[in-house]
Amino acid sequence: MAEKVLIIGSGPAGLTAAIYAARADLDPLMIEGMERGGQLMLTTEVENYPGFPEGIMGPELMDGMRKQAERFGTRIVSSDVSKVDLSERPFKVWVGGDLYESETLIVSTGASARWLGIPGESRLRGYGVSACATCDGFFFRDREIAIVGGGDSAMEEAIFLTKFASKVTILHRRDEFRASKIMAQRAIDHPKIEVLWNTTIDEVLGDDLVTGLRVKNVNTGEESMLPVEGFFLAIGHDPNTKIFQDQLDLDAAGYVVTNGGFTRTSVEGVFAAGDVVDHYYQQAVTAAGMGCQAAIDVEHWLDRTEA
Amino acid sequence: MGQNTIKGTDATFVELIGSSMPTLVDFWAEWCGPCKMMDGPLEEIAGNRSGQLQIVKLNVDENPSTAMQFGVMSIPTMIIFQAGEEKKRLVGARSKSQLEAEIASFVS
Image (tube, rainbow over all chains, first blue to last red; front, top):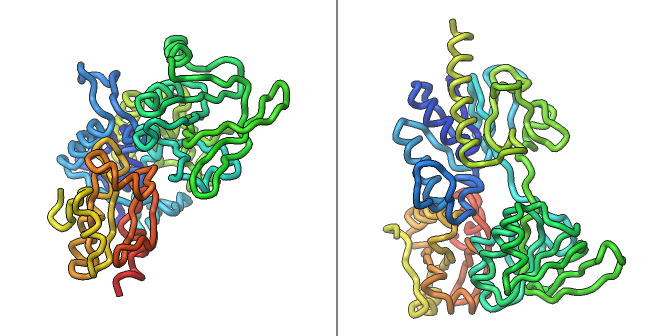
């Protein structure tokens, strides 16, 4: 028999949707994905989630939400969705060889770190290239490293990395950061941080381990080699919507388009919440809020269609 | 720590990977979110493959010299050893079925 509601993704949006759907007796099934808990699993201290006056560690917050969803009966499958068919109801969702069917879907697949796509980058991932400063900074004690990016998370991660590295070079393609003034200034003033402005990266160098970066000054065209043993990326995120292409309306950047004010998508019975929809706020608390909205929208939709 | 996996340390490491059984070592740390995902799958595989494969969990925070010796620069990293020799290295989290496929050739 088809599920009433199937939730794809397990960040704040998906888990909040699960908590609400479970408490509404919709017996939700969640496909949590390999990146269980979402981006917050890659963070350290979360200081702006209401209700935690002293802050809380990102992974701890997500463990708490997951336990809360399970407490009300959410069933969880720990794999990635490989394919969906939204052409008719019940919708079909494949996880490897297993097929699940559901009357409604909540898409909360979030966004994942963006990569540059330059030579050497994927080959040396785990051997000096990383998109997770909190996971891998530890391994670069007393070494010189570089980080690319210009937003708040790039500043935050650069400052975090100074706890380990002897020197952190921030590479940025423009001549000013997009980050908030306070974060940018904190990074620029840091004694262990140097900024290379107007700089792009053409290649990650190294046979078995990262030995440096081939970089270019975009103003002068001058190429040079920056010797570093670690290379971190903090250049933003892309929504995880590949499996929905040609099935849901997506905007030019790949985000799911929802119907103003509600979480409805272009397909009747499919709802979406969190960073997969939102390219503007992108906060744990806004994602959780949308997850709640999606669960309530699903409940009302089921009431209407069953009536 | 689970019941089926073995807690490794810098001091016991060489002895553990020298076992007559193939040994999968999971390099992890408390502050690594993606590492936590591996707990369940590794625990289950260690239970199912008991007698064929041993799974060792090595906390890199408490045992930095082993992690450094094997050039671990990202976690989770899992290395499969046979008779003390590195045979395969997996960097990044894997699902249980992916892990099963990776270890299949070592547990005939």
